[in-house]
Image (cartoon, rainbow, N blue to C red; front, side, top):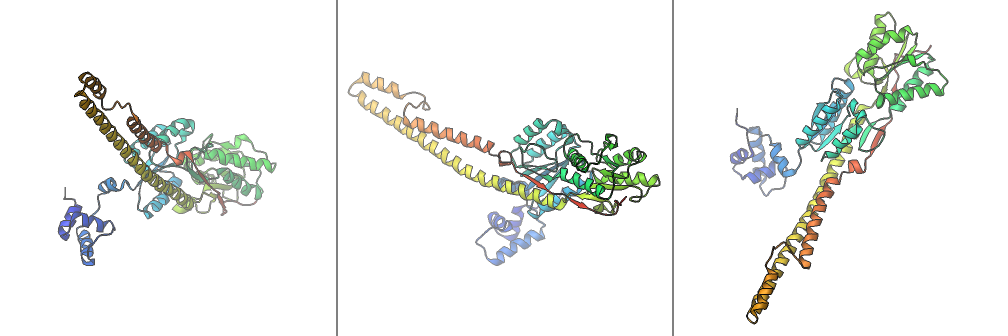
Length: 427
């Protein structure tokens, strides 16, 4: 294994102290000449010096790491969102760790524990599908986190943690209106398989839009999918055989699978059947670029998520600095009070000793009163010390409970847009 270039190596080669080298390389003020400053920078570049982030974290109390847990990294929407979030983090000097839960509550729990142990500065969480059936368990895990947490995309009815996502109910209505405006009345729907969450909201919006326009919907035309290409492909035969003229697919991968199977059966989209997807993700990969879809505004979602989480991180650091100052003051007060109590007791002991010269029995009685455990204060000084210690403990408890991303949770809800392309035609 090759030698890792350290800060000391740079300092030695530049003929300066380690402290000076550290100040210059961290962009902090230092009393050196411009030539010396440049020499340090040149030596660091020549030696390919890379700062040790672990060592830096010990000083700055910042790991510069952000965790992102996704339910399925193979899903193109989550992959694209991860990339956009990573770009946002990098802009501010942070590195992003992406972990995959496979839509499992158990895996999600383990990942949150492991990522927390790495000292991440913040966490973005796209909840696992199974977490909708164990919200209490998820909330307990989030509550145990000591860094800001933000839910992304998959939100919950109750606002118990910071979150950002899209208005899926409105998105479902947009899809329905698109097909209805084109004259379709026999419409099928391939869901995301969720009985709650995003897909359920999309289906609810879709069905409400049909109901409000007096267009009946046959429940047999609602087929459960799993946000995958295969779901759309497998559901196609059932809907095509039922004679539908339009289909709403709860994500673009489902739409792609449906279109593929329709083409294999000799149907043309949109001449024979119209299709609306959801996400606006396929065009990024050059696949099925003509699909009419509901745009989830990935770039803006990523931007808003990161801005809010970053604000929470900075807020936590400011509050931590204030608590540290308060704690130090309380500790100092406790030490001062304890010292005062000790001096006071010593004075009492000295007085008792002096009194013993005049009356030995009285001196012994007084001495008995002054010899005992030093922590057992029966006067005002002891009470002051106890109060100061209590305040210090209270400050630590406040630090543990001070989590505004939970106590003052905010939800950012973006409005989706309909992107009309060529997979919808009028009847």
